[in-house]
Image (tube, rainbow, N blue to C red):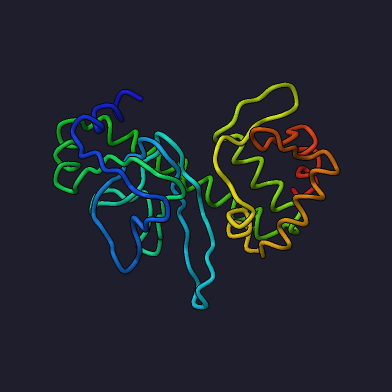
Length: 210
């Protein structure tokens, strides 16, 4: 996306170590972040300290907020899942950029709309399904976002632990590991150099949830 290249050129590049908390409700930062390279997890936390992941972002995504545009909200935590490189655009620089490039504001709104639709869809399916279907739905969506398709198999091109999956579906790591083993035996997923999902089988069982 050419517009992201413009942001890249006018913003500061910052390396971020794996495990670093980039944003949190306690440490809000009015800025937009272009994820140049790496992987960032967006999550919420309930009163008991339990984390619920709402999205995992990979290269080329934007997150953060200013007073004129929000791609997250004030209850979101953003954590680097891998060593990551971010381009940071301050509130004043972003607003100046939008004034000079009004057409790009529409594209940012489209990014926001798409992100919200994905989050609402994922949250609804994860809330309604059993653990097996929740995991399968999550893995299918992550493969659509990051992977490559070959025949019926689609890869998930990101680093993802069983604990990450458990956090995203609101389950325990032990339960998640057990169900993922079951999904492998049943031919829904396979593990080579990358985790892959059998799209046809996954869609067939998930259609029954609708």
